[in-house]
Image (cartoon, rainbow, N blue to C red):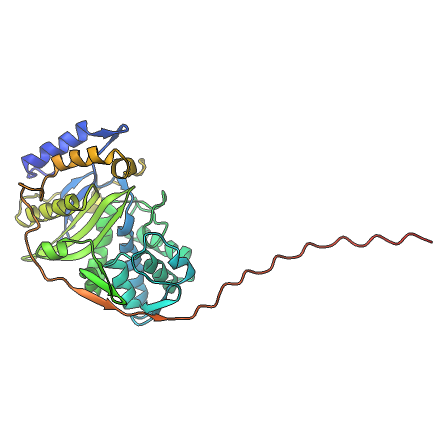
Length: 359
């Protein structure tokens, strides 16, 4: 922890680490704040601990697509078609059905702003021959970036024990996107999309409540809690914050805004570069499902509210600004997809007929 962390947060951190346990597991959750110009860490808590990324996985999906755009494999106008595999994904709000089609540009907005799990898979199947091959590219890119605590199993981040990362690796990924593809920054700045007239809002509240926010991605699963990879810029400073495992959207958003506010005000002291943080490959990701999505969640949420009361009645909020949102409009069209007809099973070979008896 940095020396300039407020006494209140320092006490909260020690209280959390020392006394809050559920089923024998400590409830400390990862945090990381970085100056993107120098890669210096301004604050970190368990930034090398493994965690389920949920929809922050889609940052890697976006990076692989951006690299495919740069290499000329696809263009922003390439059609992205909803396939049988895409439409069977869970937690869908898009309303898209088999064969609905949009441009690749619109698909990026749907994936990153609306966090559409189905569109993320359709994007993957547009770039690669199939989803599995695209995931191989995701993991190859992670290895190239030095994301030593990360393994991806899908383009959308739906729960899988083999889909994990660390706050350190997510920051490395976010900075790589920001550095290499400034021309695509708009894909992370949408506050909502409309798909064929249906509005789906981004969960990145900081875009409309914290001045200077320019991205990037939220994520939630019961197993992961509420995650956030955020990017903000003020007065020449460009900062990244990563929050993993927050209990509520309020906690996640308020904590992210507080860390950014303190960093912009110079109240967090720089230390070594983020790349020096060691990923804990000896640990398994915590599973937050018992704490967040069972009858134990009420007590756990009350404990977290005591630790992080920002934005609750009678407490200061760090989300004070009112910023107009950016809404991107998507119109789809129908592409006919030939039905997949299963091949007929091969008929079993027949035994040769027995010879007729002699008469």
